[in-house]
Image (tube, rainbow over all chains, first blue to last red; front, side):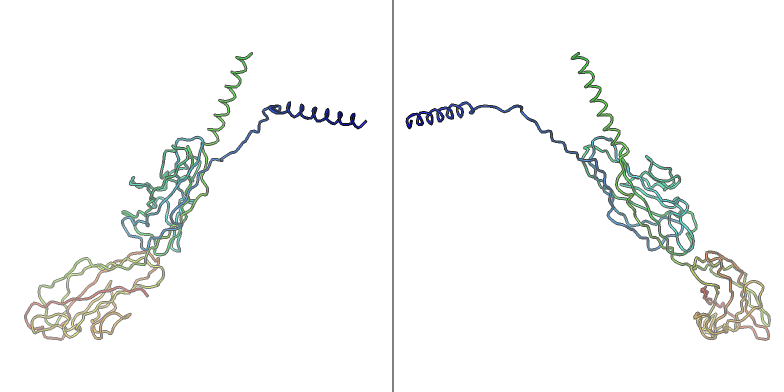
Length: 181
Length: 182
């Protein structure tokens, strides 16, 4: 009886050894796959080197320059040819306001690089801006589609052949926005 | 069947690309980013004359002899003030005009603007301008509006009424003019 038990134990071990031997090299079903999805959203950021700029004294009969500032556009896109910088004043007739009256956007000129100054008298560009108070200031190629560009932004008041505004301190807000085209 | 399947895949891929490009065009930057513009027009007050000098050919004895009339213009751009005053003076009242050792006193020089009465330059400083005994306020004009200009005639004369004429000679002097806001 004891001998019979021993034989059964040996058989069981042999079976287990056979089974283990059959498992080596066995593949699972599949391959099972896991799809990874990740999105880098398109970005277009705009910043300026200064939040404000000041003219100490407006020159009568000529132009007066604000201190130059820099504008930086940073983009990460999947498509697009150009990035256009648009600037505008919310109310063209009173781009800057003071106690003695207003300075119209037609008296405010802007440029980037060394281009000619243009007044803020145009219509909206690429849906940005307001009629009579807008200027396209800059256009930069969007290639590569992940890039960065900085330009100077020169602003000035133009009272050439004009009487100066009434004495006082005038303040206004220039809006800037970049748009992919 | 296989061909139709490939075509469907191609159409789907193109549609996906078109959708992606459309989403990019018109993408806006953050903002709008704003730049505050500050500009100051400083108050100004300027004075000018139509001529830099006037000459009378001959001083009359016992009469008033006028210099040629000229104009004075003041231009202002102010934030406050009600009146602009024109003050004229000679630095040395005893010798308003000089010819060598001979002088014509400021008391002998009279002036006016508009059609006012002539008055001598014998007053004290006006509004802090001028010198004692050699000054006259010549004109006062309303400063409103605060951005304006005004012109008036300025008549000057030598008054030797009841006086002997000065010693012979060519007399030269400098009248100082200044405007002030009050």
